[in-house]
Image (cartoon, rainbow, N blue to C red; front, side):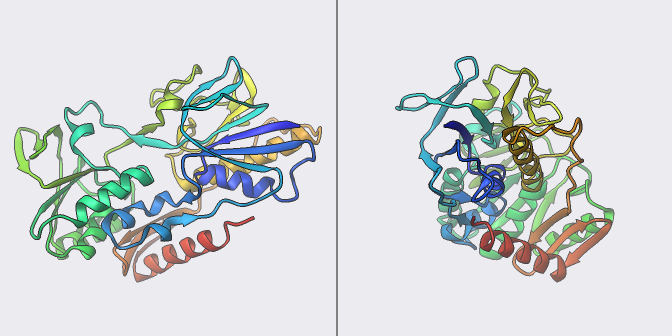
Length: 356
C-alpha cells in the first residue's frame, strides 16, 4: 500500500479528503490525516467563538470516515524530508510515500516587544478558547484593544460589540482608512458602523510595545484590560523550519503543480504555500482541488498538463455582528443585511455539506 499523509485537517486538508473519497482513491492507496483535534474547525468563525456569540460546537465539522482513512491525533514536531518521515511528539515517526502539508498559520508579532506574551489570539481553537474565557470574564466597562484592522480585527470588534455593549473597544489600524483593500464605499460603510456602535477606530497607529497593563501606540501609553492581536500571520513553526526554499514571508515555494521543486511527492496547501493571492480558506480549497487532480492523474498513469488553471476566488464576505455585513462578489460591492445573509448561507452550506 502507498501511504498519503495529510498534515492538518483545515480547509485544504478537508477539501482534499472530499475530492479523494469515497470513490476516487485507488485500491493500493491509504490516507492518514494528522491533526491535534478530532474534528475540522471553521477558522473563519473563530472571531464569533471568541466574542461569545457562537458555541464551540457551532464551529466544528466532523472528519469523514472511510475504511482506508486513518485519523491520527497528535502534535507534529518536524517534517523530515530527507528521511521521508513526520516526527511526532511522544510517538514513533510517521513515514509517508506522498505528503501534503496543510498546517496553517500562526500570529506574526513583527518583533513588537511584549506582543507574544501579553496579547490574546484567534489563530487556533486552543488560543480562541482562552480568548473567549478572558473576554467574557471581563468586568463591566473594561477596555479591550484590538491590534490590526483587517478582516479578522473588524469581525471580532463588531461581534464583541454586540456581545458586550458595556465594553470600551478600541481598534488599531495602521492605515489612513479601514479595510483599504475593499472599495471606498465598503470602507466608509464599515467605518460608519463602528462610529454608530461606539467602537473607537485609531488610524495611523504603530504599536511599539505591549505590556501587561496596556500598549504603546507610537509613544502614547493606552491602558487595556485585554489586548487581542490580529495584525498579521506567518506559516506554522513546523513549516518555517522545513529544509526547503521559501519566499520573503516564509511560505514554501512550489512548482505550478503545488509540490516542492525537488520533490514531486511533497505538496503544500493553504497558508503555508507561496501563492499569488493572500491566504484564505477559499484559496486553500481551490489549491486542494488541484492537488487532488494531480494525485489522481499520477496514480492513473495519466499525463499532467504543463500548467493548471488559475484558481478563481468568488469574493470576500465579512460580518458586522449578526445583522450587517460587507463584501465583494465578482465586481459587485455588497453592504448591509444582504451581505450578512449571504455569508450565513455560505457557512450553512459549508457546515452541512462537508461530509463525504
